Length: 284
Length: 255
Figure 1: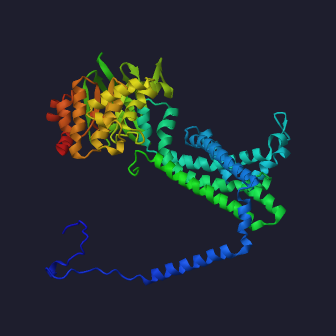
Figure 2 (figure 1 turned 180 degrees about the horizontal axis):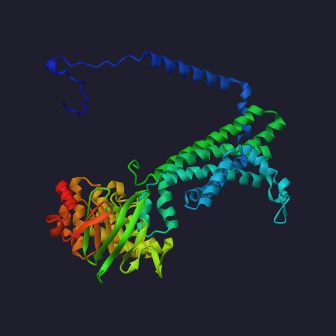
Figure 3 (figure 1 turned 30 degrees about the horizontal axis):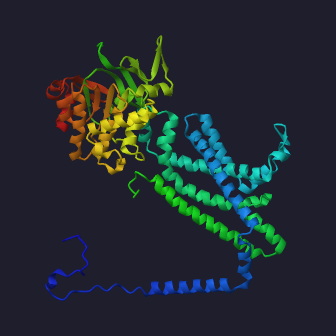
């Protein structure tokens, strides 16, 4: 019996040169009905959104690209970038500490991750915001001057991010085969070179997907800094609606910006994943 | 002890937990000779090979290559463990070829071969590339320089791994079952490369199950069992007239 697929409908062997038999697929009436019903419901929802004047789409348009909103968006973007970069830098250090043979480094790294994952980010942020109560002066400078709201936001979010990044990076490093490290050792490559040139590039394949998750989570998560009056995207629209009471349309402004940026980031993740898959079986 | 011994292994012991894998190994390998290590699985032959470039630390005994203690510095009757940087430097003189190739999958064939000369020996990249291209031609893979390891067959990958080890111009080459992970029809091309190296007088220790290769290429065949060297000698002696029952039993199974 041949395994090749042909475009001809299969002919039953015992029928001889009889009529060609056509295959009739089962009618999936239920599937069709479900699909139609769902599309109708979606259309109704869309119509109600468009026609409901309470959404005030006109107001959304008016504020969408105002200077205040764009300034907030810019702060959200650079805060996300800074927190990701610093968080992953610290997280990589923590991961390497955790995987080292030194029991003190191991324990400290474990303790850090434990502490910063065990408390809500909101609590951590408020804690750093009030750090001046514990240490009124740091190195001769008044803490209030040193730790303004934006600095608190960067520090607080980074320390929290690093705890999660450490686990992501550690998982990535563990996913690299032991033989790769042995090969690098047998070639006389130093510890730093092994990490940077051999281990981390291969670890990136397992690091990128969860890191992409974290990036999108961080972008949205930065909205928490509105609680300490840092003018990010969310706080910027809040400032407007506290004045104009147009709550829903201004939240929509922020929502649309968040969706636009996270969509672009997801697209970026696709290309980063493709880059780190080079040399692997599913690369092309 | 011979004055010309390139590798001197002296009463090496090694345990993993409660399992004693090496139970007192003494071995001399003369410069320019090929030593083939045979033995059943679990006899300790791979572990022995790995102690020679200090991928495994020994529990007792010592290994020296070209008159230099590996992994330790002797002062009086004490052995002081060397720093990692010094061990890495020693390893650049000892090439190691793994059963599973362990090529770096994210680097091209050429980058695999040039990595160590550039990073470990500080050679200029241009020089390393020229040397790598020569080595790849030598193992018959000049046209694969830009390929990634997974685009190559197992036999081609192992030949790249050999070129990678040769790029450091080591005085000693260690092969850990270099053909065991290969499809049968690819074994020959790898053995041919190793034979070619043997003809040029490279000092090698080869752990393998290829008896035919041992007979053809080895100057000395070492038979190990249970963490000990049971017997050693020229292939004609050990393979054709084994003196020990265990060697006879092993050869009867694999021949």
